[in-house]
Structures are given as structure tokens and as C-alpha cells.
Length: 127
Image (cartoon, rainbow, N blue to C red):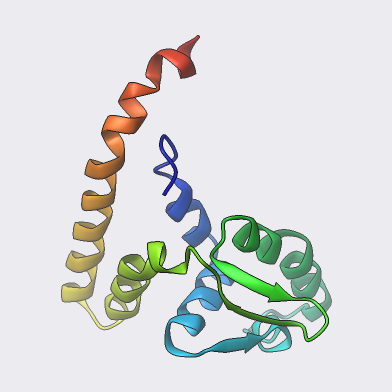
């Protein structure tokens, strides 16, 4: 994780499409983008545009995925492991209170690790 950007994992996970892609990659080697488009969106053309122009580029620029545009597939990127604790917690969170506690614990840990960087950059941010 880059210094001063503790919110980067949370931005990657903030959207249901991105979470769906990342959770799939947690359990599988690759994902066909057409599968991600079909994740329940009633307007598949709108979903395809959002994936291709917003969500996939966002995850790719963060290093979380590698996007093969010719094959229209995504695989884990070099920074994928940065999200593993959050993704595992999200997967368990669907199973009940224990998962929610684990997710909150993971978020608290990430915040405590990034807070010194955020506070250290405060004069720069305020100026």
C-alpha cells in the first residue's frame, strides 16, 4: 500500500461490481468479463459500459487485477494480496455476525496502520 493512501483498498471495494470481481478472483484463477456483466444488472449494456470504462480500469490501475482486453478476462494483479484480508472477511460476513466482527476488525487494523501516514500528511493536505 502506498504511503498516505490508506483509503485505496476501501475505494477498490466500495462498489458492488468491483467486490463481485475481486471476490470471484479470491476463489478462482480468472473471470470472464461477460460473467461479471451478468451479475444481476437489468441493463446489461449499461453494466458492460460501467465495467469497461470505470470499474476494470480502476482495479487495474490499482494493481488489483490484470485485464486481458483481447480475451476479455481478468486475473489477480500484483497488488491483489493487499485486499485478501478484506475479501476473506467480506466472504465470511455473508455468513453472519462472526464475519461482520472479522470485517470490522480488519478495517480497524487497516485504519490503525494507515492513520500515522494520514496524520503525517495532514499539513500537506491542509495547505
